[in-house]
Length: 195
Image (cartoon, rainbow, N blue to C red; front, side, top):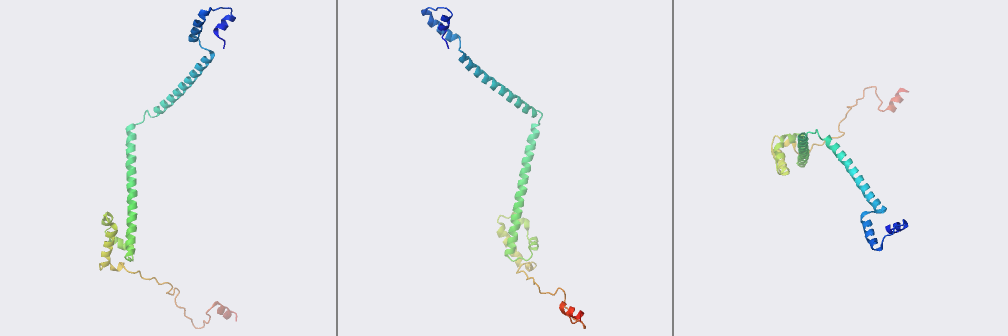
């Protein structure tokens, strides 16, 4: 870039030596170069882009807020409370089912340990609700089963299971030969037929 004094000399304007410093200072303070102008313009463009982006974000936010304009907040809060209550109830039901399953398994194992023949019948004789509420279920179930094994009216439900005989019976019944029937096998029957 040309100095202001050089430009003035080219135009035929002479600046006295004592005034050159004052002229240079005044020009630097009051006039900006093209490079300075471009830097300032770039900063201004960036600021304008930021403003546009902020305006767009504000409009989007306002649109989203308008969607909630007619929403019943107390209704939403009540719905949240209802859902939390429902979740708690579901968890309680689930926990109760798990506890029932564990209790039933414990009863079946205990009945098997004392050689119970019919678990359903024995379970029906137990005070299930009291045993479920017990702090020490395993010992209380064992005590209740021991009491049942000693009672006269329930002794028959305990003991070694009776063996199931396998292949001891004749399903068809006895085969009796009649007079005139001399064939025991198919081969004998065929011989008899084709004599």
